[in-house]
Length: 68
Image (cartoon, rainbow, N blue to C red; front, top):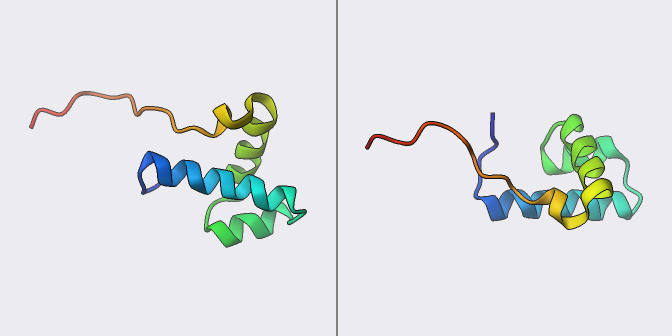
């Protein structure tokens, strides 16, 4: 399930996680501070290492178009 927040807010949260990791803060502490799962922190770090800033961008949500 996608977390609440706009795309910009989610990207900002991911960038903040990377900043904290670069400061030497442990992954569990980053997850607790940002109120997210530890697996999310691992995923964001891996994406950042492989793709840089592009890896932290939100992706568009696919799905059926609204009828209303």
